[in-house]
Length: 114
Image (cartoon, rainbow, N blue to C red):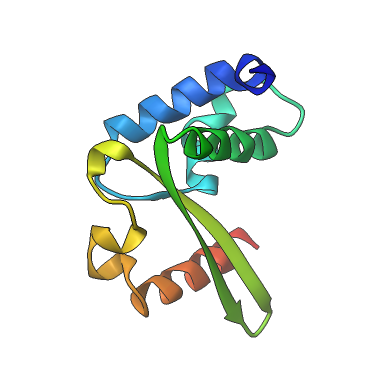
């Protein structure tokens, strides 16, 4: 697949990082900070998101998108985690990853990123 060819090294590094850190879900920005920045590219944050989404579509990792409304508008983020975690939903990681705590976490995260 052509997408594998262009994103292959980034995808492999992202999957490796998630497998080495299965204790929690990771947002796309955290994956960019930990892995994506080590790769060359014109818009590596977008490429990191593309690579993570491709890994999820290929069933190599798990993912979940979240949308939270806040006074400044709507904030959305995607979380990714290793299949080694044994969870198919983000809430499986415990109370900090379940609503309403997850909503508060995403709101704080979105404020940090804006």
